[in-house]
Amino acid sequence: MTFPGSGNTWVRHIIETLTGYHTSSVYCDKFLQPVFKAECDDSFNWDKSIAVKTHMFSCWWKRAIVIIRHPLRAIMGDYQRLRTGRSHTGVVDPQQWNWDDWYGLSTRQCLRWTAQFQRIFGTATSPGCGNATEFKVFFYEDLKTASGELNPYFLEELLDWFGIPKDDSFFECALMNNKGSFARKLPSNHPATKILNDTETHRRMTEAGCLQAYDYLSSKFPHLKQPQQQQQQQQQQQQQQQQTASSSAGSQAQQPLPGAQQQLTLP
Image 1 (spheres, helix red, strand yellow):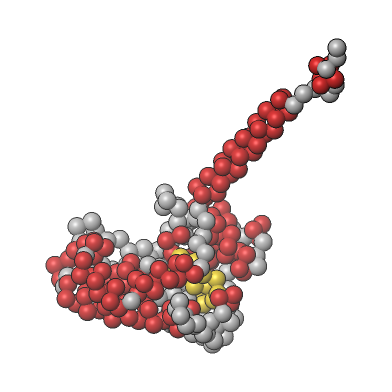
Image 2 (cartoon, rainbow, N blue to C red):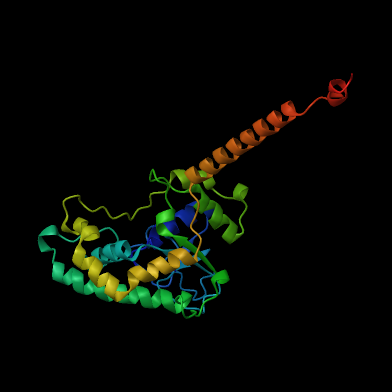
């Protein structure tokens, strides 16, 4: 379950590569059907797949993986899709870029982003309709390492969620084959690259509430650990153990030998 533009298609690729099982969708997207063989599963209960793609935020799902991407980046991606005939890889012609159109659509999408997540997870002052224990929440920005590689802890969390032993998965294959077929590449000179630092965009999204809603969710749910964080923790633990060992050895060296006090008090 994701807001459009939040990596749902890419995560489906990861799940299929990792588990060997098909994923399906509530949409039957003809653009995706050649890659995702169960895309148009018409069984209505989706019993042919391990997971089902949806952008419908509802509490009637019994269990759901939720991918939360920063709303600005999610809306940037979905804007490209909506303005290129719903293409999963298309980019708006730079010569036809319209800032007023971007401001209008992105503001409406920001309001939608806020409403959908608040319906499920609530706010700081009011609860949502969903129980957090029924959802597995990931932040899109955590799914890759600082070097851009797939975070292996994401794969481990997925296997745990699906109840699949690591030995029964294609773990290494998923780590290596993690790009997918529908990555959108924005040229470096495209007007949309200025959005992240655009003052008017930030002002509008702040007023619409999605940036504050993201901050709330970011503090509500734990973030996926990163491999370098694990290494740093292990190094810190080793340093603490070495310091403890050194302190213990120093304390023992300073203690008097048995009988030393009696020897000092002999006449």
